[in-house]
Length: 153
Length: 175
Image (cartoon, chains in turn orange, brown):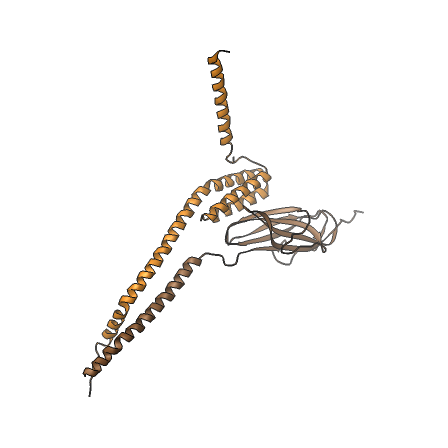
């Protein structure tokens, strides 16, 4: 065989292999097409595990968990329309997880910062009270007794 | 006059110390309360899950006592999550009798005939409609509802169960 033709054939095979891999990668996200109730339940379970991990990282998963429960109800209803809707809900929840994790991490950071700021403010307030409170108390006391007259006999 | 002034001045540092002590005590108590609230806010002290079974009218106590074999009857399962995190529940329905053993650690050693699922965030609850039927005649039977949990650690029985006493009879032959 001509070496050029052999190289060309190899290149075509390599391209086909790469295209095949890309197609495999593309097919991984869950398609919203109708699937069997069993496969949808399996998808719900795997998305729930992702949600569980996200919650452990501080994400607020209340809405997402309720959506998954709604997807379970749709799967139980079992009609083709419901199954398609359930697949769509599952996909929405799955795609929302990275955002929830980011929000959770941010909320956790600001929560820690808020706690640290509160502790610092309390410490500073303690020092200020220790230094200035007695003077303030006596000043107020003296002002309240300003009108008094003391006579000694 | 000079003696009185000296006496008052002598008392003043002692009173100042008392005021300082009281003010500091108030600050410490208020600070401790605020910090403890900030730390424990939103935490679940005693996690638990609740399972309840309701009759066809969504009430406790109106359960069917006797049904025909393969007759479908409706009950409702009430599930509530107070575990402090989102939970994925599976309710496994098994059919046994008075001799069936089940407790908080051991589920009934029977096949699952129906399964119902719920995913709940912390603090949420749901009521699941369930259409059940009994495939064979049974006297003093039990419909056992076990609560199982799915998580990243696997699937396990979490020790909650309900049971309904029920009899299933064959339909009367026609004629």
